[in-house]
Amino acid sequence: MNKPKVIVTRKWPAAVEARLQELYDVQLNETDVPMTEDELKTALQIADALLPTVTDSITADILSVPNKRTKIIGNFGVGYNNIDIEAAKKEGLVVTNTPHVLTDCTADIAMLLLLMSARRASEGDRLARNKQWNGWAPTHMLGQKVTGKTLGLIGFGRIAQAMARKAYHGFGMKIICTAPHAPVPDVLQEFQATYYATADDVLAKADFISLHCPGGAATKHLINEQRLKLMRPSAHLINTARGDVVDSKALIKALKERWIAGAGLDVFEGEPNIDPGFLELDNVALLPHLGSATEETRAAMGNRVLDNIAAFFAGEEPGDRVA
Ligand code: DGY
Image (tube, rainbow, N blue to C red; front, side):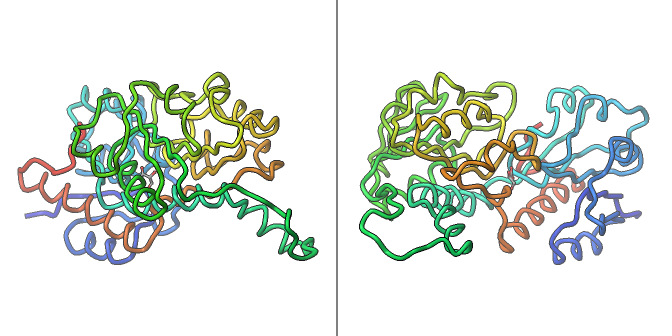
């Protein structure tokens, strides 16, 4: 029997690519140059499975290409706001994602950014490198203490809970949260967490806000000028979710005018472009979307995609089906 034809849109960890080569008639992307819309359309016409990632915008237009051969889209990423899910459903396509395997590493990056922002780590690093450090002084580069402070989580899924675990057990932080549905009492109990019905309650009460909601139309600019004004002047905003959850212009204004003390960002509106307004500010720590960027996690994400398509080709329900 012929092996299914599989197209991978970006370069993947070598061990996972080797597995793909064993199992499938696979087209890899050795150059790692993102595919164009036309290339993606052609891929849907010639492959049984398309394996895109969070940087590939799989629009309704691409999905509606005639004479499709593709039956399953195995997204390399837990977030799937890069795919028009309604259009995929309409086209009868199965879509899967890669949950669980990146939970801890993404929460680690959120914690890293929280610490960087609170303790002014990016600013300190720049000062040291630029030979502008004149020596220790009692009032030099004072930041905010993290231990014992209140962490407000917007969204309370797997990654938020992993961050709560680290913050509660490791830093003795008080945990407050909001989510569209109240978490079950046992989950809150693990971190002695308090649930609030609205983001506004959490924003006003926390020393650190960390965003953990999905991207997309429902959360676009959830953090806007009005909500930034609810935060404490000593508070920090951490975003490892999706860039468009935050109105960048409003955040730049808030940081410049010190409505809030700082921010730590791993994701950006229109990334890889970063609003130049951020680059002029000392009170923002910037990372280039590193949430899941560890060797272990990226290999696990690839293997998760393989498990999903293997189940599909075996006529079973893929474990991580989202459409
Ligand atoms: C995801 O998987 O959605 C991340 O943003 C990239 O790891």
